[in-house]
Length: 79
Image 1 (spheres, rainbow, N blue to C red):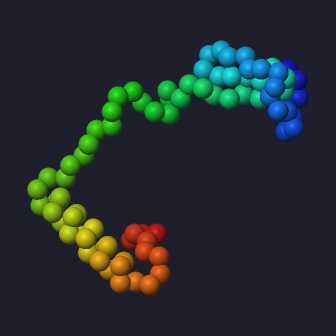
Image 2: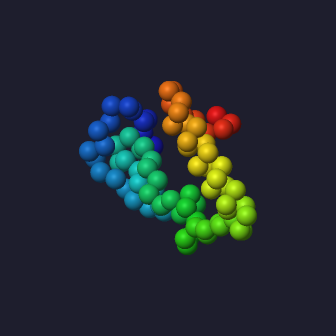
């Protein structure tokens, strides 16, 4: 394997195998298969039950109305 240089324009082509692409000139690796990062299927929606959902909505509305009255950029609690 050749030394990796920051100035390589990667014009020699790419060798692809096993979810990665490798520059034929400098050997830099680019990952092309991100299966481990994003699990298969759709994300599950979580909906709070009855009173908890109403309290969450009221808390969010209260925070937004207070943030609108402030002159500086609003930030959520805990930031």
